[in-house]
Image 1 (spheres, helix red, strand yellow):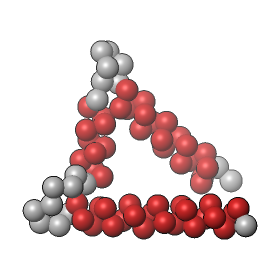
Image 2: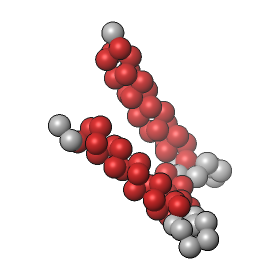
Image 3: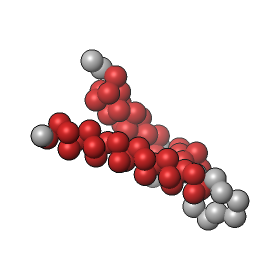
Length: 70
């Protein structure tokens, strides 16, 4: 039961991700695309610490650990 709920949640997240990206790519949209958000995060720093890059690295590590490490 819990496995089904988790899979459904991840699939719902993917669908919402695709819908937001589609909405962002329409002409005249004010929604930033995923590429724009990632570019902003890569530039974000607190003093000399590249917080955005560390956060993105952590996110990709999490994705790899949970979906690719089996």
